Length: 424
Image 1 (cartoon, helix red, strand yellow):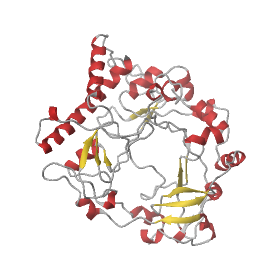
Image 2 (tube, helix red, strand yellow; image 1 turned 180 degrees about the vertical axis):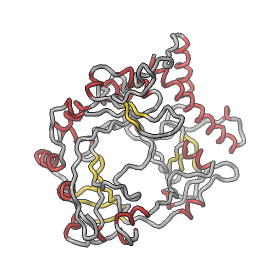
Image 3 (cartoon, rainbow, N blue to C red; image 1 turned 90 degrees about the horizontal axis):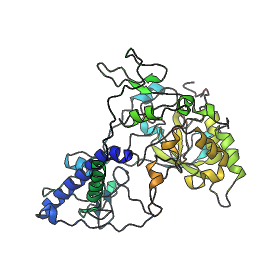
Image 4 (cartoon, rainbow, N blue to C red; image 1 turned 60 degrees about the vertical axis):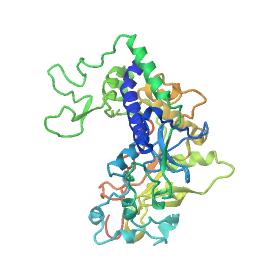
């Protein structure tokens, strides 16, 4: 019942957004929203639908093109009506590159051919396309309120309308909301406010032992992040964690590896472990992100792991900033790296929430067997980087909306002196 109480505000907002979109669709057809029947999308049980614009997972109501199957989530529909489109026309400041190497243009960084022997690991590069800002400006809501399929440059066909559809039966969310309200009306209200957060001492000061300063905003009570140690978590901090989690605040757990067996996560150790369980048919290369050049590259797997420890210099004497995501895939991670998989599980804090298989408060665990569950990992992210952020092409992840909450555990950091002709 506690979970229902905490999810109810989100469910109300979700239902309201769907009803707003239904009203907008009814207005374009000149009928009352009550008379509009939203058609079901034909979707397989193991198929997951994503928004083609923002790549966010679609839960229920969405718009789709019957001609090319382009899908658009409700959030992007709302932004399009306000004249906004997520991220497609963002401009990037190239000043950071000059901080690293003066006088090198972005055009020179992207190279189809290697500049020296170290760059032989790059098999192929996908050079970014031309600026699509002009095409983006052509994508807008029609005068009658309908939303056209976007231009070809953004994955659509540009010759049809996006129709409102749903994944569940039309009244499923409304009925779910009614059941949740009814259940809570028969239960005692759960109070989540009023108690003093343990982050504060008796005198009202912030306890530096379990908190970390994250910002310096004046007249703000939100300048600190709850930051317990793994030992603190083991000794019972779930209630304290929930106070921060309910507010949508991130939590940092220190020394998570102190309670593990100490298995090495150095890239070459992982590489050797992978070779011990080599698959019968296996590619020798993998697709990685070349962050400085804004492109995807085919990388020899062994060279990628070796480069993490030795450093690689690419065209124009710039470091290769490569990032390998989700490898090996989740379907084979625990198969091919069983000891690392077990080590990962033992390092998880707040297991009631974070255990992907047995966590009693993990909502994904409670999904029925016939539902396509989210991929909860484990996943590995291995990236090169430089200590000073360049402002462009750093080995970072873009701000995005995940389909589930994420737990990131830092297992390994290696430092080395990268020697270039222009800079060490």
